[in-house]
Picture (tube, one colour):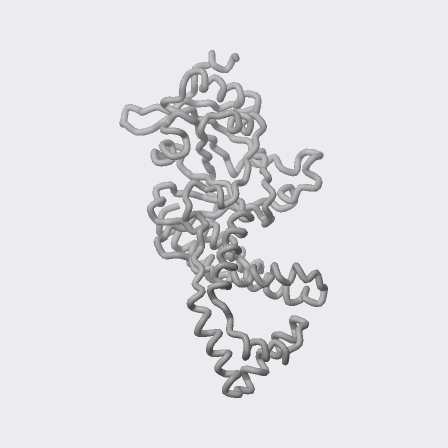
Length: 336
């Protein structure tokens, strides 16, 4: 997917506000899954075990190597004039403003007159609100999980960044192959959300323009407070707010600074938002071992790949056109 196609995808995503079939169809039309996706890895005990077991673990945004990844902008300043306008309307005796607030507060199950009196006589401390919203942002980053992929197994930037300077390996997944996704095919999958609801995969949007998620942060803050009340009377308000924030998690998760544009990244976003780590089981069709991967580590990769049932195991090379390419490894390495 090129830069222009990624912009078209973002234009659709940023204007979605519901999960109706038409909205989902529009999004899928501008971001059809590529035939294959790649995952670049370094060589260590964890990555070899994951390869051996055909597992991919979701990572939370607070553990990404880029500190600005999924780092959304909160503009508390834009809330001040709105707050002051509402308060000024009340002080001036504007009946429409008071009636609007009464209807909202009454719907939330609170005393309208008490709320309005508090608003009139207790100025909002924005510094405290700003700190609370920052804490919400940190909480959201801990709860948004995704897995990063790329379309091109010969992406030089990714071999440098995520495969230890050509000393690691890359896994290639054929998304058109029904045997690629293994979730839901074992007894242990019966109670797993990912077995029932396959996670979606989207292209990353690269931009130096910060994504303003103030509305989302405020909404999450209020939803957290409603949840703490443990009062079923507030359930309609909670659901209303949750629906109004539809697609915000995707917009936040898929925004990345333009300096990373060469990564040409796609992301699998976990459908469940929580702080609990989880994994998805996917079987690669191909493993490519790096140009500089030491021989003993190459054998460990081959052993794990063979145990995982992967037939196509290759070695990265520079071909006669001076471009990155790969070739099957010698058959002798299969016999560990």
